[in-house]
Amino acid sequence: MLRVGGHIIYKVVGAVMLCLLSGEILAQEDSEYRYDIGAGVGATTYYGDFNSVLFGNVQPAGAVVFRKIINPRSAVRLSGMVTKAKGSYDIKNTDYPDLDAEGYSFNSTLGDLSATYEYNFWAYGTGKDYRGARRVAPFVSLGVGITYANCNGGVRDYSAIDVMKSSKSVVTANIPIGFGVKYRMKDRLNFSLDWQMHFSLSDQLDGVKDPYRVKSSGAFKNTDCYSTLTFALTYSFSAKCPTCMKDRW
Image 1: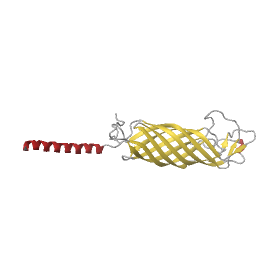
Image 2: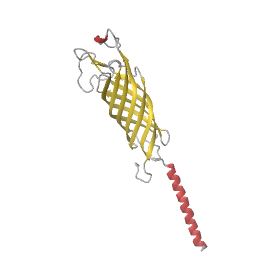
Image 3: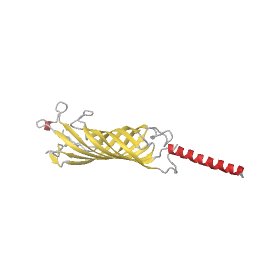
Image 4: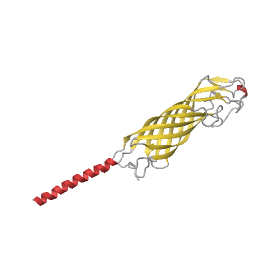
């Protein structure tokens, strides 16, 4: 009886040890998450008829960010940003005859809502949630967006025979293209730095359309654009089921 009882004790102790070791191994693994959400700050530069200098007239910006994580290599990001666009007529660099006498400067408020696809050059994560993943991952992005511009003084259209003046508000589409880098600070905290160029379909973000009095045609011909540099901090949530099939190699 003692011998049989000894075998039972050994089996019970072995089972307990196995459970403890298994629990420790699982505790060392991080979960994969479905979403990121957070906010950021940044800088915006307008490029158009009244500024062609890289990073000229830089303006502050605030943003909110939401990501749907497809897998450790890719994600879809929704972002909203509010910023400013400023510029002025510099006769030394260019000549707009209609503006020589009075000059021109503008101060527009911009709102941007974009959806972009992000592709990481290598798997992004802690390495414990996805085998081979790295905490730092560069990425490229491409998407579509909508730009809202509120131009002080309204929009002046010089392509018409008689200069026409329209409302202050302009809504147009834009194509954001960019690149950046992500850094997994902790299991759920992420830091990202990205730069995007937003090619708009409008020449009215600065309040002036076709200042040379030549009407433009074509989607991106003589249109305004702006770049954004954004620092964002996001929090990952909605863990995938630990007992389900995860995105592993």
